[in-house]
Image (cartoon, rainbow, N blue to C red; front, side):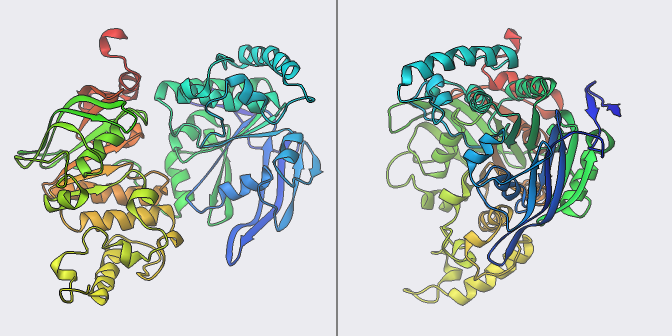
Length: 527
């Protein structure tokens, strides 16, 4: 039985009793101490299909796939591959069973060639040369068959992210994988690269491969999968044919309530310039120019989004504005020039100028994971008079009381100020950082990847808080690799490529295709 979706692809029905199965998991359970990560999970994946698995952070998706790939051993349950029960003790056993996995963070040796990476760990005999010769021939066959064209002699460090991902897929195919697991595969791809990946996945499916796609992007689930399974709190809540569901239904199944997928906001009413950037340049510690003379203005009462593939200067832009990095050029906030070098270019000086910063990496720059929530909630603002007991001591009781108020306001769960930051989910960690920075009602909020690794329910809440700050007349500079987020949240969009701003667009007058071309360095004149 098949149904036709709106894009013209044929959707394969959810497995029936007569459908050949590539994977069958029965009664899988796994606990880590008191935490039940997987609870009596059963799932069937039909051969030659693309099967999506979605769920909030902590739903148990990664644990389940780690059991299938041999990283964890289930406490209970059975794994069947192609109808036969197997015991998968480690990744080598998974590979022997025909399972390959493409991780979100690639497992490649950057100063090795493509060819060397493909055969690494799968060499035949003690001599490398025969293995390389055989691999070169097979690699060409695989590249041609699956549209995975990549230079076998290129160094991985010289490849684009999209081509590095192709190398990971080739590694799995070289090891004769019939089942491919892809974990958040489009997180660092341009829209064009993501579309090419989907064509590759369709080609793999046509050749009889079975693909499990783990993603939080509902649009991708709807576009590329045949069947989708939804997990919530360690349990499997539903498996449905993709053609018979909708993003709204899937979101509700994931979260357990209705979720607003589009940002609900009034048109912006920007006023005076808050942030003015002229000819800003940033050179990193290796002498490489990362930001190349950009000009940008952000006004009070608007959200300006910076779109671009990671690594094109957005991080360095935020770091200079936040006081973490030196730069040259002119930056004014509320008409007053910022010091871009020297002792007044640090984060503390920026906070005194009413600049708040939600960094891109909450673990490395936004939190100290071993510290408690109340301690994290006051970092950077601990010198504020309201937190001082006397000249030498902070009023810790007052800080904890304030933290409890902010946790309630920002719906941080559990609302326990004494819980260590590492004990919260990613979404709740992000809420702690946002609460700390937004609480001061800054004139300028710098926010990087606000919903990276965040549950769909928390995404909705975070977007609401950012829009509320805009509606209070504050200026917001948003950096995100998620084009859907940029388009729905921004009032104006600037696109960065290779340290340059390629142009600015209004969300109502552009689309993902046009922005994707600009993100790849092409302007409208080149299309």
